[in-house]
Length: 603
Image (cartoon, rainbow, N blue to C red; front, side, top):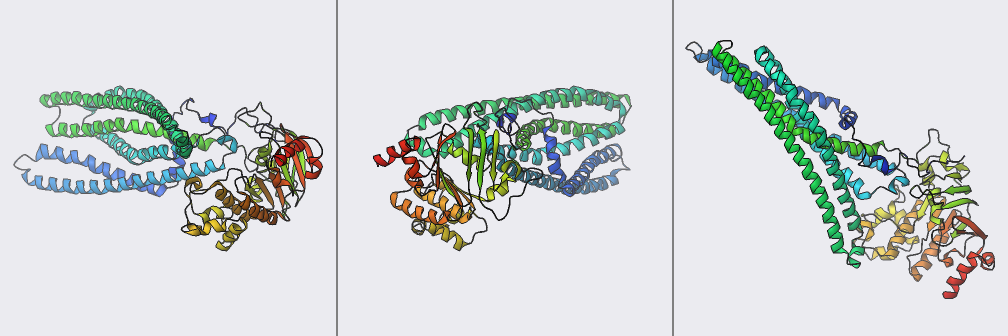
């Protein structure tokens, strides 16, 4: 069964282009956080209770003030003043405890949600297909994991806490205003649309500018990550000034975008505060006229004014945090764009189980493939071959012939455009990718070494490996000698990307990792290319032991490394042009013969 079209280069869900900054902003991206909030319903309920208690305590203060003004300054009411103040102290105590509880619950809830979100985004990134990472920039993905989640944490924690408190206070104070004086409340209610509509309209501009600022910062972070990762090459070519200039330009663009976003937020805040408090002044003037006319008492006006101040203050605070929430909205949108990407290479709903015991048999049947980033260029054009269980097959040919692509398809990093790839008789497109990869050990040409200890790097091949197993793998890979010379032996940190190791040492750690994996299918991509002659001889001996009774496919430019292979496939321009043993191909007069003459005669 062909998987044609799965990676035809015409775009798809598993592509960074799907969440470019040019897309139209979603109206309510923060709603996507609700499932995360729903995981902690008890904490949310407790925070809401504390919020309501604090709001009720705050709203009780004007009632005491009114009674004190209207009745407390008479001869009969002097005795009541002490009791009023005692009650107010009790109310303030309740307010303090409830506010502290609300703050703790909401802030920790924000931290918990962001921690879950970070974990989910990272886990999702690790599941995305290679086609996604062919275009995505690592620095930008890291920026989304760090800067954007920090923005959400700030909003979901402090900003949302402030917003909820002021929203409840605004609604409660508005209700009490109506109860206190319906006439004055009418003036306030008439002013609300004048206040809210500009805030909502301007808030959209703030969110758009915030998104631009975050995207620009991600661009700068992506460039910095790329340059720092290759700092030795940068210095070797004395490219420091050019890199500094480019990064400074990127930082300036990020600064300009952030300044534009901040300016919009500042204008939004100014508009909100002016409209809110101008309406309070207007209502206070009308209320003063009512007191002079005898329509309300001074105490009732004071009560109304306090509620109006509470409502205005709540609405004013909402206008200030609106900008932060708008920024968080942009950040949430960027994160959920990643979570919305569906990997093209995924586990089928009903995967076909690979047979046991594993045989390590690989077959390509008329496979055609082009990378999604270059759909017009066929990398493999009708490839067909079969590697029998236990057979050792080499793939040789000039650079760009498609050798490494064969490994990518065996590992199911991509699906072919046409034809089928099978492992032990099962089409890879019908199997669980994790099951497929668990039967494969890979030694790539550019070995990945992590910023961890030697032991952890070798143990990456099998998470359940014992120290003895790791030591044995290192010995077979001829790595024990240099490991024992290191300050802490197997526990020595090797630095980011194994920067403290030589190329040959990194390669031997990768070989030890593959030995430890003990998989039925071994893929060697120029596995000895970085080794000196003596180390290569030892490693070749180890690999001969390792490849015994297991299927091995070797990619090599140095033909001396494939002389012991059972069969050699010669590739050119995405096709298999020759196959046979070294002896038969060397005298056939074809491409292999020419390559052999160039290498062996030169040597």
